[in-house]
Length: 278
Image 1 (cartoon, rainbow, N blue to C red):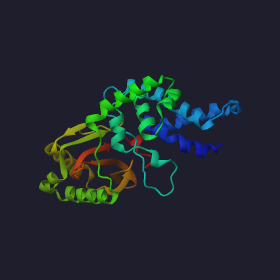
Image 2: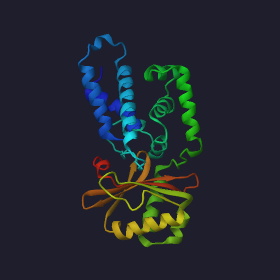
Image 3: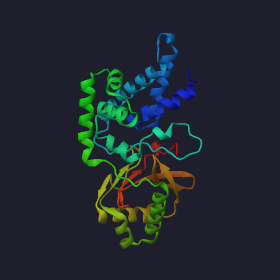
Image 4: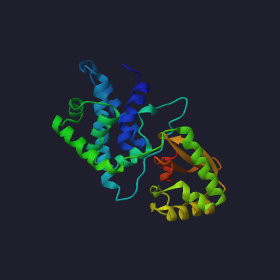
């Protein structure tokens, strides 16, 4: 059996991909591991499978509670850096930022089935055993999830170097205020989604269209961000901008590019509670 640190690292993607929040994920894992250590584990034939099942089901319960409390606010995933040399998490199993945002349109059980089947390659009989549903119900949940996601699947460029250069160009364009160049960088359907949590008021939670996006992003840069240090980072396998005021991270903007190489979505996290681990 692995040590606690290794177990926590293995279990983290299962919790995080459902909960989208590091503290909640770690709380679930810690709670499960404490209960596990109090059991007669010799009676459990497959301890890893037992722990995964327990973490997934508790994560579903926590997610349901959080969903009831969110009051229609835009809530974005907590950003996770995925290109660090020494990783405290299994970042290869962390889903892309755009996919996590998309999966938040599913209910907790649909999300769990989709993740287990599509991200972790579980079979329906295994999923049914984990979630304590029938095999047919597992198939139905997956079908329902795919139907909801069908027209909204992320379509990102998968070359990190190309993405990084594009974001570098975007920063320079914002700095120079070149509106014409910026228009060419944005997709027609571009959106900006912003999450300030309960502590920060955002200028707009949702902004759509090229003109409105340019107006918002140039305004934010001119009045809030131009004196910040800007770093380019990989967040959940996508290019991102980190805005620092001195040493304090103020804003994380994650970019989704479409197949034409244009910016389709900008996910802007200003909630300070979601920026502490970057």
